Amino acid sequence: MENRQIGRPTIPTSITVHLGDVNNPSKNVTVSFTDYIKNVACSEIFPSWPEVSIRCNVLAIISFTLNRIYTEWYRSKGYDFDITSLPNYDQTFIYGRDLFENITMIVDELFNNYIVKGNHIEPFFAKYCDGKKTLCDGLSQWGTVSLANQGKTPLEILKHYYGEDISIIRDAKLTDVVTSYPGVPLKLGDVLDHVKIIKRELNRIAINYPALPKFEVIHEYYDVLLEDAIKKFQDIFDLEVTGIIDKPTWYKIKYIYSGVKKLSDMYTEGITLEDIETDYNMELKLGDVGNHIRALHYFLGVIAYFDDNIPLLEIDSKFDSNTKQMVISFQNEYNIKATGVVDINTWNKIKEVYLNVLSTLPSEYLIYKDEIYPGTVLSLGMMGDDVTTLQQFLSDINKKNPNFPKVNITGCYDTKTEEAIKYIQSENNLEENGTLGPIEWKYMIEMSKK
Image (cartoon, rainbow, N blue to C red):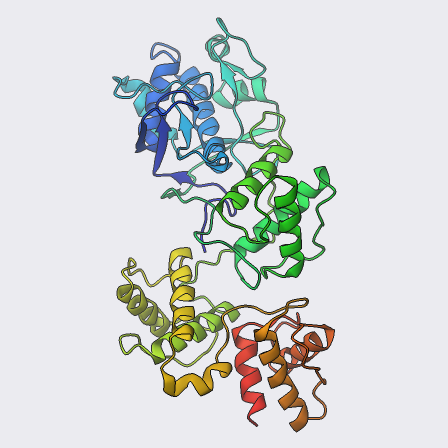
């Protein structure tokens, strides 16, 4: 489910600017990204400078801005804006000011280009100062004029200040502003690509904070190991210890991760493609295949059974035109923009409606309630009524099939339960990870009735 913190950065269509000091209740304004860059460029540099110099400064301004957005520098601290208007924090932005035509034309050309360092993917924290009144270890704005007059190219000037391993990413994708938070708290039993992101980031944080456990395997299941790690993280950083990744916990992880990686520093450790290779795009759409589509079909199938406005489909692994129509019908039913694409908002709503269906089953269907997937991924170490129900079905299968692993009904998802689930996965050509989701549940119910 697409998110701007997954993979390479994108260019936001808009940006929210705080007009004043961070700690003062000043006005926020939301303007287009290009208008913001034009405003800052016209406030920071002179239109009479050589074009090469202007280009260097515009690229630095763009990269600095994108770094603030990509790292969620302010939002991870609880603020409701992306950047401030003040140069002592960020860059000079004068709301409503007049613009210079030659600078705006250059911004229109360069707005979706930005600087990166080495093999990093995040926009480089392109620190700069005017080079006369203030000096810094980054780019000198007036210094770019001298270098431009010497015949240097924009890239040569940027390398002069930021290092020879600087390069420029060109024609980045333009998207709406999307925050990294998945929209709902993550908890034990959830399965989402955001879980993989958190595990990866906690592993890096654990290098600086060794009291945190590390994950040997990065997968999308919110298991007991992650719950324990989150509780430890919350304890270390004075958050309410719940084991649930709510918004404060999510952004505290983002803040600490950005800090230990020095993502908003010229001498950054950086994020590489290798760092994010465990991430994948869970925006489900026409043409996609795999078990995520099977799960989508299962959830929508249960919803559709009790809602005549949504067509029923057979469960398979293909997102075809029928699946798209099913998604559109669901989106129309619940006042979501009818795109036929399952993004994070649609997925969250599907889960919400599915769980509501389970809790409001008509009386004549209550006898079948245990046969319907409980809505939570079950895995090693989990306990509770759902695990007890699972083990009862597994025990029924064993009575009919002596080759099936024997399971004790304990209410604890132990290694014997995991072995039985791996057996079901093996018999149905699923990944043998011992974790039970909607597809394993479906096959388990079918096996218990044979």
